[in-house]
Image (tube, rainbow, N blue to C red; front, side, top):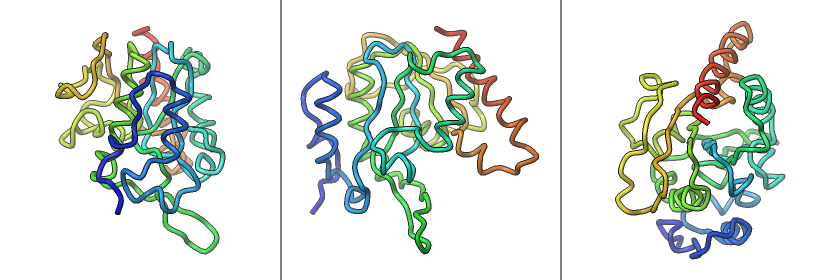
Length: 214
């Protein structure tokens, strides 16, 4: 029977490569059963900006790297447009395994449950502890609620400069990172084609807020 938390599988280390290897053995929730592999975060341990998405998608699950699919390419474009060096940020997800449902030969994204997000949060908190970012960017409602609480409303606080709530001692941060919540780039891709340019511009505007904080 799977443990109800990833905490049992997180090693006591600040070595990102060791953490990434350990994540492959995580059975903190049942998502590991169907995913190809865990997809840990990627980027420099010295990054000032940490971007948090929801979960890996189909291409990320296969490649073992975050944000390498269509949403990742859109994120790369938005970061460049906003004046943020993609190589200088750390990217990860609130949930490390791909949750999906099969439709024929396709694997369709399925939103993680609150239980799955909470179960996986020890990995995310450990990444925060290692990176000690100055700014945390929360991409989408699932990512936002993973750190800001289940009552957080992205539509109400999008683009605002916020602070993390008390993590009850679960992570010891040397800095008090500023937090900006915005949409997940996949939401732009799923939206009506005639509205994508406007949605992309709004996304870039949020990322420019981030650029101004570093």
